[in-house]
Length: 316
Image (cartoon, rainbow, N blue to C red; front, side, top):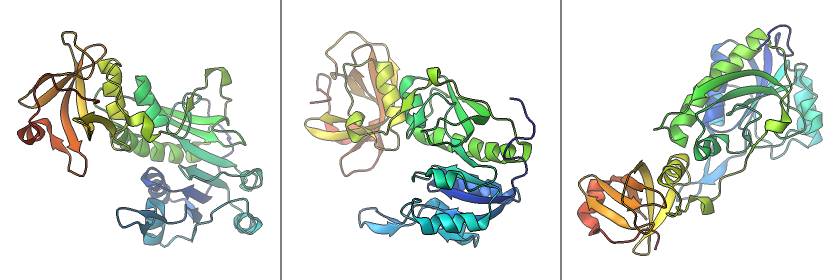
């Protein structure tokens, strides 16, 4: 990509907006690189866990640990928070998985604009779940895009892109961790080098809609390859699910294998360290799974107490 006097080249004083671990990795990198963080914005604390205790975001925990100014507004449409942001006179605002919409009034505040760290190679996979959608689609690669935010959904001009191959073993968690590190390095590079922006090709855009729990149910009539992609894409959240003897079962690790034709969902073998289940095309060798209310376990541990035998059906 062409570089030069891009909008963020002289950015030193930043506002940072982000919430989960993906964003915290970027915030840490900016601090280590010597940028001034004038304010950190993150989502309000949320109830989490079985006790539904209030839980601070990863970005909040880091901000508190580093003594950074912190705000947790429920919206950025309020005049008071907009006035506070404007008074800081930031060079740029860095946004990473924040979760709140930036209205036009906020987008216009930083001299160098608002820069988003997006976990895909835009314009592919605009939207909420680019990591999972890339895995579901069987993409060979993904990456990070540093983009100048506008009023659209991940439609702004791109400052920098870094590619990352997707391995056959990658899950949403492993890919998230790789992209978090790549995103952190990329935003520091973009701010230091000030690359010139270039427009996205809207004709190539795809949309990464939010993952729903309903999608997590395995359809055994799909190909073994497609089923294994789903298992990887939904690991760790929400977890690919099926039924065994009417009871829910999460499948965490599996691989496609060749097999003789059988009704989809039929257990072809249940021995040693794998449960092999027929798919619409081929079969799925399950090596890690979890009963409802139980812990994740190897297929060998599961079989030791499951009484599963060939001819049983998954999905029913």
